[in-house]
Amino acid sequence: MHINGQYFQTIWADWHQSELMIIDQKKLPFQINIKKLKSFNDSFQAIANMEVRGAPLIGVTAAYGLWLALNEFHNDSDFRDDFLLACKTMKKARPTAVNLAFGVDKVCDAVNGVEDIARARELAFQCAELLKSEEIACSEAIGEFGCELIEQIWIEKGRKTVNILTHCNAGWLACIDWGTALAPVYKAHLKGIPVHVWVDETRPRNQGSKLTAFELHHEGINHTVIVDNAGGHLMQHGMVDMVIVGSDRTTRSGDVCNKIGTYLKALAAFDNKIPFYVALPTSSIDLTIKNGAEEIPIETRHDAEVRYAEGENGKTLLVPEYSPVVNHGFDVTPARLVTSLITERGICPASEDGILSLFAVKH
Ligand code: MRU
Image (cartoon, rainbow, N blue to C red; front, side):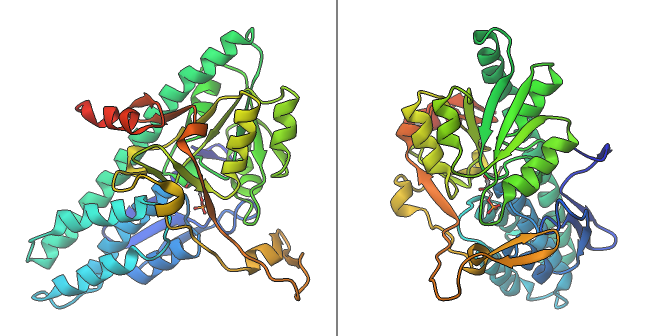
């Protein structure tokens, strides 16, 4: 997608320089800073510190990070143990998005059994490049499927602007290009369907007001930033036609884990009979678990993110020092509150049968 009219992806690699380039998302929207990652540790830190974030982008960065790890090993004969340790370590960079393990396992499988380190480097790089292009294709397909849902609502409401509420950032900045929840919005806009997006600010890190608003602005999409608690009020007053969010991990039974606050939006949407869609690539589905609330590891981040607000001119204390604070990064929306899942393989009910039907079709 675009920044100031120039086409960008969130990550790109230079094989010859052994470097990875990212847009440092901690600096957005106030500075557009391209950062070089030159080592395994650089890529690990970029994920852990959220210079890159969003489930698909975390997975792709991890895959390239393992290529960088192989570039750092000098002992040709016994790089395998070090490599397996790097894979294990990388999986710990953040706990919730299953795409992290997905990306690591892809590279690990590609390199499995290879004894020549130069060949292992080539295979790891090719694998990361392929994963990146597959994620772009998934996002674009999600966009096409989701656009049909927006178009349907547009026709039903007499071709008036479709109001879509989203939470956090599940746009191209969370992926490589297009996004998940925002891909249908971009496709609808390109098709001439008038859309307006209600952007939850998404405290504590403000991925909504900082990243979603930024990318919608640069694509010329009508949008309004709202406080996180406004959604229910807007829904009661007929100002939301549909909700679309992303997911960091969706269980085999259709429970959806996404940024903290998503569950409350789903409850409000359910109460107001507003469709609640989750857009995700199948790389965000964890077929090994069923019960999201019990089985998905929820990231707890530093309390400073809640205690301070971070803006263009630095940090401001919001919470008195004497009050304890807790910072859970994600929550789980039970499948029963999800209207449908929008994936690159099609739209399906948020249920085990629905999800398995996606995998039954050969792609
Ligand atoms: O903590 P973040 O910014 O990595 O959380 C991102 C989200 O919750 C997104 O909604 C999710 O990763 C889906 S990304 C297409």
